[in-house]
Length: 330
Ligand SMILES: Cc1ncc(COP(=O)(O)O)c(C=O)c1O
Image (cartoon, rainbow, N blue to C red; front, side, top):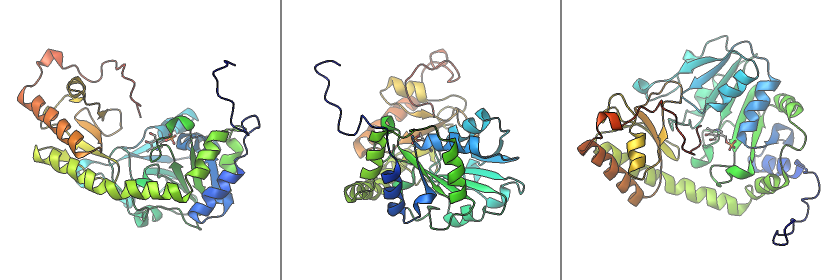
């Protein structure tokens, strides 16, 4: 150890004990601790369920975060997709889910569309012999009214992430809440000591009154800021999907019907998330984070500038070319 290294906080020499986190999260949601499994980020939950469950017909509702489908495929499952589209605002019609689907995975609110599906619509998917998995990684950005977490979650699993609201991606803190029988099956797949001592401390801290205040502050400020961004984008003629998340999905085909505006925007200082890696979307879709009005104004100015002085065809590469940027590809 370098003499400049700080001493390890007390408790770090021991193997982690996730029980206090499980208890704190259970109290926080008003459920039995047997319904909660702390995980190494929400993403671990997808790997655990892909290994623990043996669905014959898993269906993933897209466009959504690509990790659930990737985890299912990596575990050897053949995954079917239900593609939602812009014509109906990327809303889920429960009747469109194949009747024999015995595992259904949906995001709520959904990344990247920002659509918040009504809890009743998702509950209506629940039936004997089917597991419904709802990724609520961004639910903290809402008032929580459409969450499926409740005392009775037979056949249901909800994945939560603490990395978004609290900016803790490097800590890897998430959890699954749901049917205790399913939770036990997921737990049986979890590597020993998967959730670290700092992650456990973060989970407990995220259940505190101070964390609640932080969450409320963000959730209360978000609608106004999102409206500001959406309004500014619509003013310049862009199609913006109605969002309940801290981001919005934008159709830029009115600017260029074929190619992404991501790279020219990066050249003007704005990093945006491309759409084409999400099943069901193409290069003319981008996802924009909700920030502050000044940043929104700068972004909209950069987009308008693109329209006024488009790049020559050959200097505006297709987004299918290799991308060495360091953004999260998910
Ligand atoms: C919709 C969604 N769910 C889950 C995750 C995984 O989050 P975590 O960092 O908790 O693994 C992400 C990360 O980007 C996400 O976008």
